[in-house]
Amino acid sequence: MATIDQTSNFGKVFWPVLAWTVGLIFFFPIFWLVFTSFKTDADAVKPELLFRFTPTLENYTNMTENYDYWRFAINSVITSTFATALALIVGVPAAYAMAFDPSRHTKDILLWMLSTKMLPAAAVLYPMTFLTKNFLNVFDTHFLVIIVLCLINLPIVIWMLFTYFKEIPKEIIEAGKMDGVSTWGEIKDILIPLAWGGVASTALLCFIFCWNEAYWTVRLTTTEAATLSKLIEGNRAPEGLFFGRLSAVSTAAIGPIVVLGWFCQKQLVRGLTFGAVK
Amino acid sequence: MANRTLPRLLQTPAVVLLLFWMLVPLSMTLFFSFIRYVLNSLRRPEWTTPSLSNWRGFGNYEYVLFDAKDFWFAVQNSVFIVGSILVLTVLLGLALAMLVNRTFPGRGIVRVLLISPFFVMPAVNAVLWINMILDPVLGLNGIAVGGLNNLIDGLRDFPILGSFFSMWPEFEPISFRATQTSAYAVIIMVTWQWTPFAVLIFMTSLQSEDEQQKEAAILDGANAWSRFRNLTVPHLARPIAIVVMIQSIFHLSLYAEIEIVSRGNGNKNLPYLIGEFTSNNIGAASATGIFAVILANIIALFLLRIVGKSLMD
Image 1: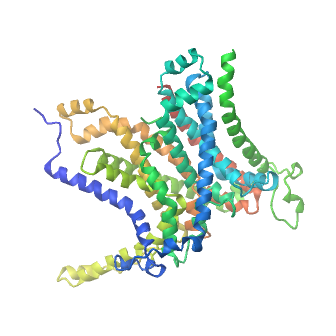
Image 2: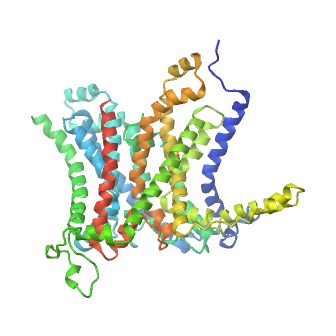
């Protein structure tokens, strides 16, 4: 009989070793960032030292006085959390209606929502600055950053929730209706518990996107509502004098999110391809 | 009819919010693109307030297309950067997805290592690459080239072969801060960040490939290459199209990386050019913005068509 597994003995060793090598190469820049964060600024600009240096935590202990890290980190936490919450509050009812009470326009509305995500942000840079600075007077406030982060992620949130909700059999929701459960009750007591995993991973992904957003958070803030993206961009250190401390603050800025990201790899596909790849 | 009202009501906040978000700033951009509007002008102070009396028709568009020397350079550079990233991420993504798709010890860990770059915030990505890795003196770029030179130096002492290596020059580490090379730096760092995205999507798609069909092909004596060409490639056509389009849309608005890597060295793409115009000439910034919207919409139309189709299955 022909064997289905045609891998030779050589292949059994070669491919896994290659896969591991590639994985380590891809991770290396992150490793190097974390590694450099334990060097003093003087050691950090001598990459030839490799392992011959005394590790130090001073970059982390001095993060507050060097960069005022916590102020930016707290801004990132506040804006990302509230933007995610707001996106869910607006998105869950909308996705619920679209999934269980679709009209003939539902598909068009969903596609139109996605198309708003595809507008290049730079095209509306000045109007946004103009409106928020001169007109609405909300420039550089948490309120503005929260609203903007919510709006740019709302299409993805609704879309993801929609694909999760669609997997729930309609009969369950309709049975609730027969029993005279209110719409709010249906969402709260039937839908959310059933689609809990989907709602959670949507929230997680939305939070990650908010945290990493680097156009509006930089352009629409100065000091009050500035997030970690703004902090890092403002300290790009072209002269390389502060590699150590810059690495520490960068590690602190990406660490939590990279770890969160590990938990939602699978959902990422759904969130970014709008259900078009299964 | 009453049961139609509630679902509509539930969708209203989302629709209204997105409608405002899309229409208000965009129509302002459209308006500004047809008037003379600058932030500072001592000679013509009336141009500093947006008003219909400063109507310029298509003047800003003509200015951007024919007089502003950077527009075509920015378009060309945008296309160059986006195109290179697309080719690299799709090829690397396909290769790596095939590699990780087989089972081997520690596969879960390798997947985590591979996906991590995608979650690094763009500002950190740029700062990390341009300073700590690509810098010719302070980064790893310098030691890598130094190591190569040392290796060649060592080889020069060999009999016979040595005279061959003596003809080799000493290599200089490339600086990634010049106009053209900083575009390469941007391509490298974005490829690093987005290859995981391609890998993830191709892997998801590979897993849904019909194994029975593949086994049948093996029994029919089809070799690995023809199985790949006739079964896997057609199966991956749609995911490839999606990866290409989604990335095009994201990378056409690439900003943080260019801002950090190339500030002031002349390397620019459309969003960066818009940013430059915005410091004074709002009319030109808005006209450029409209061009960017048109460019993005051409790609978006294709993408939405595919997404719309898969919505039906």
